Image 1 (tube, rainbow, N blue to C red):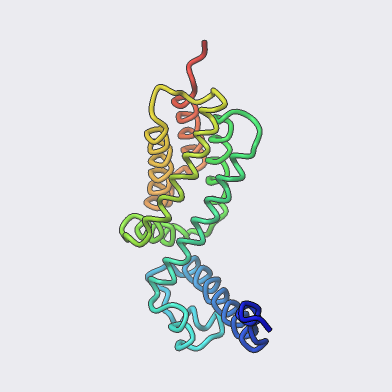
Image 2 (spheres, helix red, strand yellow):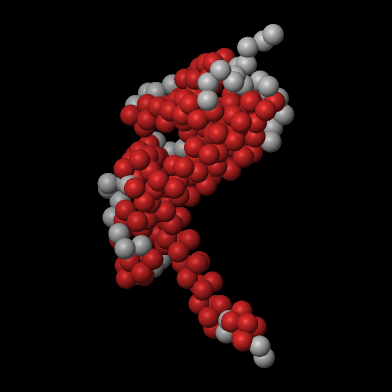
Length: 211
């Protein structure tokens, strides 16, 4: 058997171990989200997560060296979900203004459906993305995704060319982050109404001048 073929043929035991490890990893991840959203980030202990995931503490630390490492992976998961929403938004019909309105409406709906404790978790996610240099790639991906949405609008002729695309992208990202920070800071924050207002403002500000 050629060497190259042997490299790709993992023993069945290895394949089972890898699947088992992935399954346990995902179980811990889901248990972490569950406990954080029910109890809050600070109040949740590693033992609480282990109980829900049905794993020993040693197993937890084999997958996540600290609770912060778990939060960091949850942040990455949330980011991927956000990127998926943005990609889905890009494929929707209508103008860029319509897509921006739909994006912010989707975010508001998801926030309203979340548990009150998600505020603390989202705040931790935002802190990690902004404060940890290791998360710079995640921030870059989000900026790139917003940029693609606006680039599509520039090419379609419904987004202004009066300002550079990176500037427009920064404005939209800034509005999104400000909205989320206001939400995590106040339980009475009118998310749906404010998200609608922000989206309309952005759509008006970004619209290309009519000839």
